[in-house]
Image (cartoon, rainbow, N blue to C red; front, side):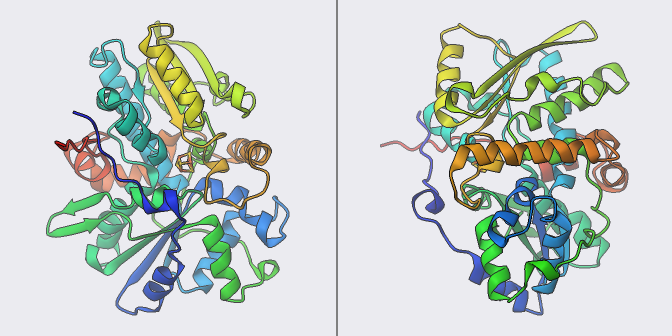
Amino acid sequence: GQCITHCPVGALRERDDTEKVWDALADEKKTVVVQVAPAVRTSWGEQTGLAPEDATIGKIMDALKRMGADYVFDTVFSADLTIMEEANEFVQRFTAGELKGHPMFTSCCPGWVRFIKSQYPHLVRYLSTAKSPQQMFGAVMKTYFAEKIGKKPEEIYTVSVMPCVAKKAEREQELFYEEYAGHDVDAVITTRELVKMMRSAHISPDTLEDIPGDSPMQEGTGAGVIFGVTGGVMEAALRTAYAIITGENPDADAFKAVRSPGFNANDGVAEAELTINGIKVRTAVVSGLGNTRTLLDRMEKGEVEYDFVEVMACPGGCVGGGGQPIHDGQELAFERGKQLYRLDKDYKVRFSHENPDILKLYDEYMGQPMSHKAHMLLHTEHECEVKSL
Ligand code: SF4
């Protein structure tokens, strides 16, 4: 059968969720917990007049707290969590021969997931089952974090600030946990909506201060921050996959080859062949759905073969997302992407598997990557909805 996917409202007409978030912030019965995606820090300054080096994630956190958020977190934390699950899943599926001549595809971009379900439904089984960082964080907030602060999942209202309009549809993924039946994420606002909310709260950007995110999901790594740029998920996953296979860390920059040299339409694919402990891993990274179609068609014809493929629907990755400030698209995506690579270099820890707060989460709650609990909370089935016509 053919996949019939719903067209997310956001794809046709941008939905404004700021009122929904204001209502939650005003509701005393709700504990509002916000996460901010990596790409948002590269662009919100463009609309507020702050220079890129001054438009930090810490100031976004200050703004959110001033607007009434109870807790604020950086999605870089859950990007690390996604890497833990996805890298382990890749090593397992790859070494078990389960992929049988197909690559495992990344699954954290809802624009791509929708595309493969509608255009290449026979390849859906090769998507990673790992949820995206947005969804994983929502699940962790409503379970592990809720328990920590003595709340029930239904008392927690989860908000994401995303560079992406398609994340508003991804949010509809369900979460079932003990008696709770709801969603990982309750509301998604884009970078543009965040700036709009700051304006309506009369927050002047130059009064904002750098504040840290809350505990216990505070730490992030350089591997997590590059999720916002094409090639970043692959590079972060390879850093951890290498450690899983060999028992030791590679040089943090060992997999630079997967970075895209430029983000223009003809240059949307970066291929690399790596050898880890004698195991050959062939990777491809692609951004933009036109480039993706070309790549998939070449794969289908047997012209190219890969083991692991990262796909981002937006040219340049999430830095070029549809929820970002709009100017002249692609060149800005490239500049924003470079900012994330600079941030990666500045992180004390550059491997997801060495994030101390991630290690604590596994130790205290999830057990191991791919454990039963991790499967319940952090993975999803990508089912095609088959409808008879
Ligand atoms: Fe959203 Fe674009 Fe990022 Fe995909 S690449 S998650 S559609 S911003």
